[in-house]
Length: 286
Image (cartoon, rainbow, N blue to C red; front, side, top):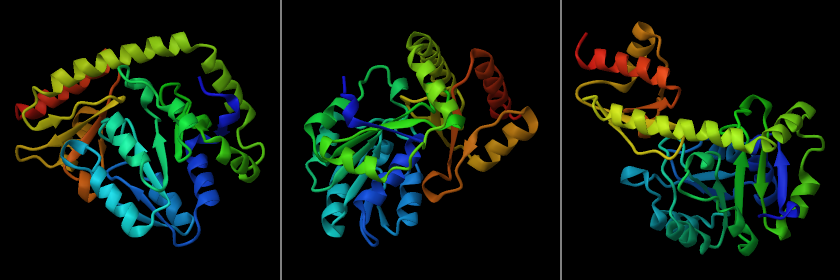
């Protein structure tokens, strides 16, 4: 239950990230992000002449709260970005961690793009009504499947939303996107049914991946599973072998923090079957 006057719709949450930076930051100001994570925070900071101070995540992709605190204080950072569930590992931030971040003297942006898949957790959107330094971003791109139409929204403190309205582009959401988003909201039951099937299949896939000797899957609360590649295999080689020999596509990130990982999207039971057949063939040396 968040009042409409605290919400602002954008052409995807990406537009709202850029809008926030244009309204809050001056050239040379700092933001803090927690890699590996969604790369648009650093991208938009560059576009707006800001400096990104990265605070890498701890083992298990946990937020380094103390590291973020030091980064904010030492750099007089104006914004901290946290994604929960995080992309690409699917981990979530705890209430205690988020409360500690909100005690910092800066704006905390919580990106909940994948929150629908964390079925045992609730959105923190309502927290914004009691926190003047908090923003929550949501999107129709993931659970609603409207990524190509670009519809997102944010929940903002009352003191901030008026200024954002003044700065946002008029007619930023297309008529087609508006119709699609409204239709999704009218069919929440159907979306939840599909979501529940995906979450159930995620657990099936997780159990199956644990049987592959060269993969170490991370528990995820999103619609994908991140796997560390080991046992003499290179992650890039696994990706290419799956694609070239079995027609199965997985994600590999050619970045230092993720070079040894692949990310696997959760699909249908049939897709899981095809994937696991390919992985077992690689595992057996076939």
